[in-house]
Length: 236
Image 1 (cartoon, rainbow, N blue to C red):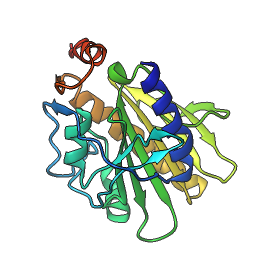
Image 2: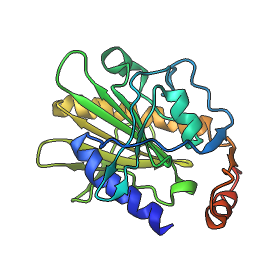
Image 3: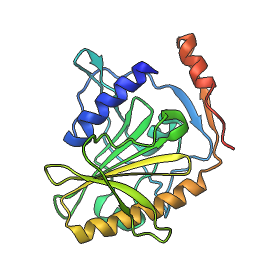
């Protein structure tokens, strides 16, 4: 657990703010299958079709880079083992396809979008809380304020703004933790986008509340890792 925490902390602190990943040799993917992870078509709950861009991996500061890049969303879902939140449908015309599709050590999805109309950018992260052990996957460690997302259920979210004007939002719904960073938009656009992100995430989490995560540990995994994996709770 300590190693996982260190890897995730390093990836969160660097990559969510810089939008960059070092490159190194890619490790073989863990064999994980998520039932009900259907992503052949984009729909109203934020699932997505295939994206683009694949890359090799690298080392940074003596540690293998935890940012793994994938050619498309289905490949990412097979690797992390859970459904991935992509984008609200109304943002697809401007931001689809994704510029980069990452996982953070196969625990957190990290999908990055660049607008086709202006300089705005969006990063969307998803994680399964029971697997990651936290509902904060934002990677931001500054000051936060809590506010309403403006959706029908009056969902409360945590919002922060970096020195460069990037807005960071985090919240959870059901079994999932979400984090979104948005840069290059004005206040009105941000509020509108936030409302849509939260509303769609709520439908996403409801749809997948009972999906089952099935693990197939590789034979060369340590006893400790296999035990941790097999101990993952099943969906109720």
